[in-house]
Length: 302
Image (cartoon, rainbow, N blue to C red):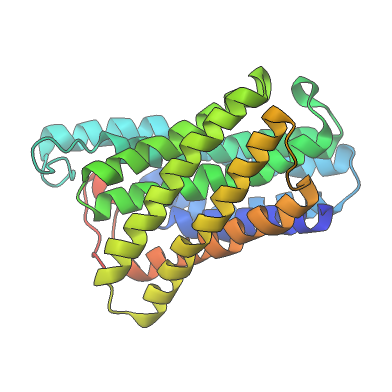
């Protein structure tokens, strides 16, 4: 199980996050995208070293990149407000009446911030330090969770919301994915029942993302590769999020459920490779170039 989780985390650091960053824009992100592979490589090496000072230092180098990414969130808010004052249409702030763009912005901001949670957990776990008293195994799973349920899921929810023209279901998805992730995070400190509530909220949001991707985004795309990737990304959510809900219910109630090793092999691996990797790759094909409309430019649409 440990080897599989490490592979999943490494894929998140080395592939999913840097590919996802190409779908957002900004001066700081441009520099981070260039330098990210170096930090991710150091973090990946730390995964395979014995716990201790060396692994902790290498993990810390990667964590600095995640903190730099998180600091892009307030700058994004500032740039967005500046663009809104100068040209609301160019800032993509003019959806149909009653359709607020704020839910998708919340999803994009969540994508910028959550890798820092994973990076912090990585430093503690690789150093052998039980941060907040959590078991080292729990910290390792946190590293995986916040690269995928945090970064990738929130990013894709925001992209789907933008592609849907900020429709009501898409806004609900863009709110519930970050909201569910936040509640799950709080549940680590409060208890299993709060984690169950977070899992339920996150599952609802991810199912909405999958349904909208299958029904609308995939349906209008003519590129067969992109259609296939979108279909796979949307389809696996039906199973993986049901597994997550079942596991959280079992932890809260004591009912039988899959052990963590099987959850890593099913829920974790399918979400990492089926949903996140295929989903981000598909969106790269849909929007290969161009600045992020939320800060003053426009993407080509699929």
